[in-house]
Image (cartoon, rainbow, N blue to C red; front, side, top):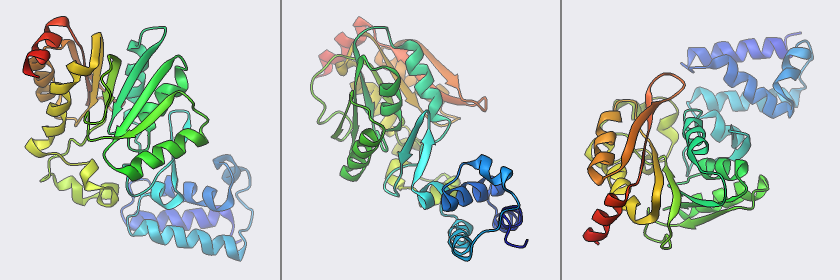
Length: 291
């Protein structure tokens, strides 16, 4: 029974723990499910089932990649997010559960009836597609600087059967048509380039351009805050995901531009994660005066 599912999982989890995986049992289970093309329940229902030599070799190969620190999502090529299965590639960030909080907040505040949403720095399309999948009456536009990210988001759109989304290549607002969006959402780069966490865990394998920003991680957030009023309808919302220690600074940026009803909302771990605000007419007038 050495090659039983139970024994193989136990040995793999032990090996991953030795290589400092933060979730060795989960990682091993996900990788074995991928090899067997079975749901997680199968591993426990058939824990005494023996793996074939081919299955064991394939599994060991994936475990070896994980021991080197490669993220599980890059190894298997996808990540489940919201109600969607999204393809991921090393050219984009891996969607994380904390970002689902941004989706929840967006859906809570989007008014009923037709409207439009802009997702800046869309990456895999996770935020844009999650909103579009829940609100078929909305038109959702996602933009990203990298053409490979746009292509990936379009692929995820097609494979999830979502018709009310559009993806464009753009450096933030540069290629976005003049439009009064109901809401703008973004999970932009917000990590300080000197942050030591960049040399730890999964982020070692993710594209640095999607992670770091100048001015202690605030440069891109400031740019989005300053230019959003031009693209928002009166009363429209801006929502930005940011670092756990950036809530105060991001609120100041929102208030400095003239947003009202500004607040920072915590993620599932109780950490500051999303700052949001509603545009007022005074902010629209002030922004117009700058252009």
